[in-house]
Picture 1 (cartoon, rainbow, N blue to C red):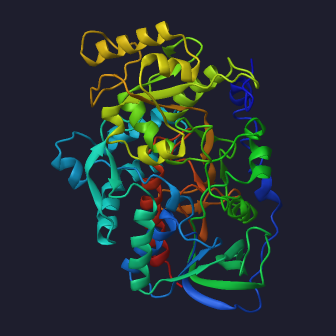
Picture 2 (picture 1 turned 135 degrees about the vertical axis):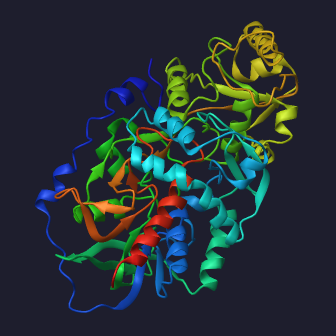
Picture 3 (picture 1 turned 30 degrees about the horizontal axis):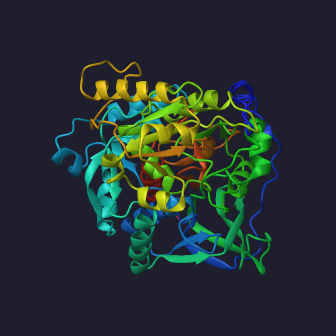
Length: 504
């Protein structure tokens, strides 16, 4: 029986169908000739003001570049980065070492390869893992403050997720933005870059719509900006581009997306038009912590990470657990889709996760999610069963089994790692689950030096660099939580260093 939003069978069946659809684009390219004049000239132009763009600007400044311009098409700065939970999985930071946590870049790569089903580009994954700890130092220099804890996320073999004092991406984008401004970096918002300008010697600059209004997709004037050293594309994913998502993965056409409205395919299209090699454009990640009771990924998604770690998820049809709540995201999302398929449009079978008061007391996002009604309180097992339409005796047995696992009296059939052992006792706090489209796994191919690869030559396109979600290959078919931010930091910095070293 099909879930009202999506059928798991259609999702998995169509999963690689359009992988090479854009691959032939490079054979019919029309060269964008250099304009007769440039409206403005900078040393480096960066497209996007999220984690990747800010990191590229940081490293360009550190390498001595004087004229750096960051262009952002939306009114607000930071894109999806500013809205994310800012979990950062970094092995071998001084904080992780101080807590005696054994970890290594190689362990992180092994975890990433497992989650990515082996589709990761190994050199890219290893580059990210080896340079992750350096991102921690960069953020501290820019004024980011961290909580004194390191936690484990699903699919990770060790606790390595670091959190800013306020668990929001804005806790990172705002201080980085301020630090970069103090160093002379220029920022321009409502500037929609829609084309790369290049000649036979490489990328020379960008075409921009200034005073851009995303509501109407119009602007007041067009302009050309020259980049003497090169262009860094850090524009993020395109989850809100319904047309592009549907064209590359029809099975996801009706899924709600967690991204902000500016997450469109403008720049991936521009890079394809410039001859970049596409990687897995039909691969998307679904967020297993998403809820049908909040828009996008709200505070409930933060709460769910704690409920997954210290509580459990239940199939209402059986009253039993159905997954390892700390497995990688694809594994959990697919398990939830199986549960959802048992329902109908009129009687959906939403799985739910829940925890006890002891977990709610320290769970990020709990207060806001509870206040908004995404998370609900039940003062007894009977009340929890009634809330979610579960057989009360089956639910009682599941809770009893869990408490025996926590006490070490019983082996967990799902092999979930327990960094914190918390019994489940009333009152309970629960949240309904339904996966949402969260991350674009594919994008433009890059080298470990963040150089964009040409579809025609399979070599770098001179003057063109990219970092973050607009690129593909780092995470393979699916990514681990807390790794997209580190991907942005690491390859943003590499892109910034490479473009800085290029002769004007």
